[in-house]
Image 1 (cartoon, rainbow, N blue to C red):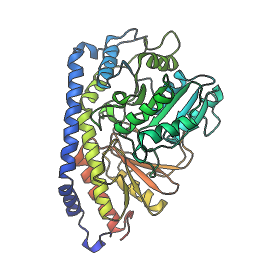
Image 2: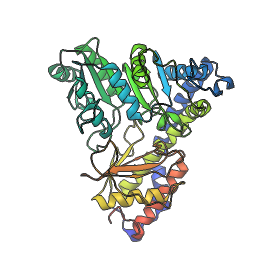
Image 3: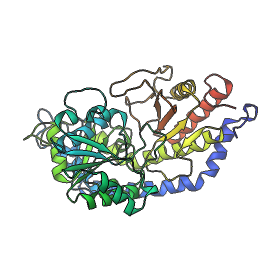
Image 4: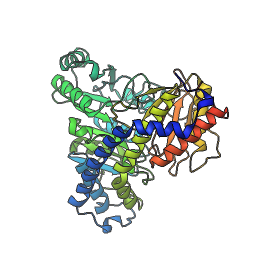
Length: 427
C-alpha cells in the first residue's frame, strides 16, 4: 500500500530503503571488485604506457594505441579479438556493423529473445523502409521469445530446433529488457544455456549478443558464456562516463574483422581509423567502469526499493538478481511518465532548467521522452530516464556516475511528486 502524502518524508524513506539493501549493496561491491581486478590485470598484461595516449593524424595506420586498446578489451571480454572505434556513432551502429558484416543473402537472423530494441527494427527491416536494411539485402528474419528461467535445457533445445531454419543462421540474443517491462533482462547463465541449445541445433552457427547496458554488472561477459560475438556502446557502461563517443565489437577474430569491413571497407578493416586523441579518456573510463557501473546498479536498487514503497510497479524488484543497469518503472498513464522524466531532468547537473518533451526520434516508432542532463550527450551510464509514450507507460532509468547523485535526485523527485509540482505516484 502506498504511503500517504502527509506521512511522507523522502529522506527517511530513502534511509529505510538503504538499510534493507545493505546485503544487496555488498554483493554489488563484490562483483565490482572482481571486475576491477580483471580490468587492472588486462592493463598490466598489455604493458599500458602513456605513449599509447599520443595523438595520431591522417589514416591512423596501425596505431599502437588503438591496437593496445583492442587487446585490452579482448582480454577483459575473454575473446579472441575486439575492436574499439570512435567511428561507431552508437551502440545500434556497432550492432548493425556486426550483423551486416556477418550476414548475407539467404542467411537468417534468428532472434531468441523476441522483438529487438526499437532502433534495431529499422536495421533489420521490421519497421520503416530504409535502403540497406538486412531484409532488403536478402537476409531472412525469424524470432522466438524464450525465457530460459521458464524452460528446461531439453525444452530450449526442442523449441529452437523446431523453429530454426536449416540454412546458415545467426542467433541473436538481447541481454537487456529494452523498452519492454514484460520481459526480464538475461544473465550470463541464461545466455550460456541459449548458446548451448543453439549450437546443438546448428554446430557452426554464430551466436550474437547485444550487450548494451550489461557490461560489468556480472563477474564476466557473455563471450565467456559461449557467445561468438557481441557489441555495445562506449557511452554506456564500458566508457565509465569519460568516453565521449564510440562503440566496440568483441568475439571471434573472423567475425570482428567482418564487422570492421562493414564499418570501413573490405581491405581496410581495422587497420585504419583515428581515435581523435581519445585514447586516454577511453582507457581511463574503462579503468573506472567497474566502480561506475556498481554505482549505477546500487542506484537502480534504490529506485526500485523506494518507488515500490510508494506504490509504483517496478521491474526488476529491489532484491532481484541484476544483469544490466536498467530499472523499469510503470506508471498509471502518460502524464505520470512525463512528470517523472521532468523531475529527473531537474536533478541533472547539466540542463537542469530544460523541460523535456515527448517527440518522435530517428529509429523510434512512437514519441519518446528522454531526461538526460548529462556531460556527454545521450550517455546512459550517466543518470537518465526515458520511455516511449505507449502502454503500459513504463519509464526506463539507467546510469548514475555516482550513487550520491542518484540518491539526491530520487529524494528531490519524491518531494516534487508529493507536493503536486510533478506528480507521478498516487496516494
